[in-house]
Amino acid sequence: MLTKLMPLALCAMTIAGMTGCAVYADPPARPVGVAYVAPVGVAPGPGYEWRWHHAHGWGWWHPHRGWQYGWR
Image 1 (cartoon, rainbow, N blue to C red):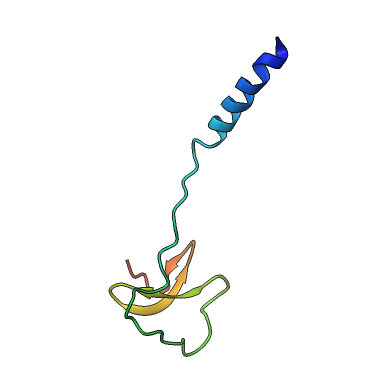
Image 2: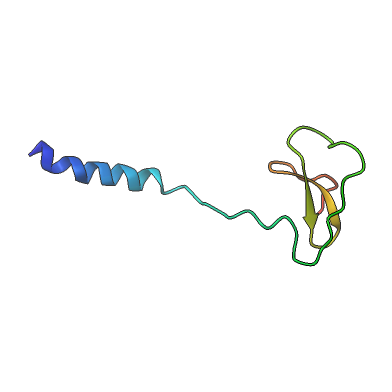
């Protein structure tokens, strides 16, 4: 009987473990037709990436802090 319940328990644990997960695709680095502009200077801190912002152009972005200048 235990061997019959094992696949059901494994399936239930897998589903329960994935309930809080959300997977989002990264936005493209820049839209088609936008020229790349190299940064002038160094990143403001570790973890910052040089990215395209739809309203402000190129700037520094951090995955936890967001845009350097508070752009939304």
